[in-house]
Length: 178
Image 1 (cartoon, rainbow, N blue to C red):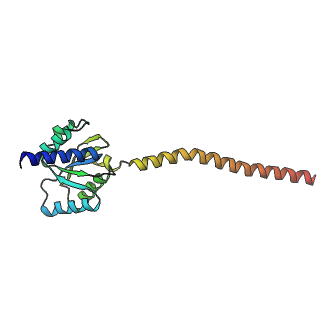
Image 2 (image 1 turned 90 degrees about the horizontal axis):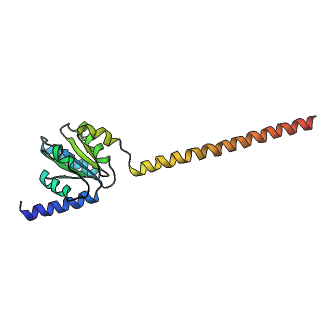
Image 3 (image 1 turned 120 degrees about the vertical axis):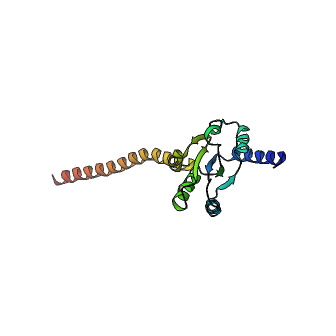
């Protein structure tokens, strides 16, 4: 690979890292061609871009960004690395890795991830990443929480109004009877 080709890959990766807030770095070493093809097929079906890139090129691309990815240098950018990009969901790739490990084999390992520029390092972070809520899910939860007290007040007023009407009706019936 020539310097120009490496520079082009680094530039392309830098743009991808900059424009995609969710990326995962995985280790797929020891996998057969058939297993890698199944992984690529699963990625394609779920809208995840998967690329195998040399660690030095990933490192240089990450160094050109504003965010500090230095913690990745010691443990994440070692050995065989594949990068998964998803433009909309921070947990889509984590869910794919979990599903792949269940369906095909356990050789696919999470080495590190960046979700909204927060770093997650190590395979033990996979469960945490798989349960992350998206921005839209969090906004929906907050709206639901904010609407809940208003609904309680309105239902209280409505039920109280019915009780008050019932009491007034009973009192008026007593006066008429007396």
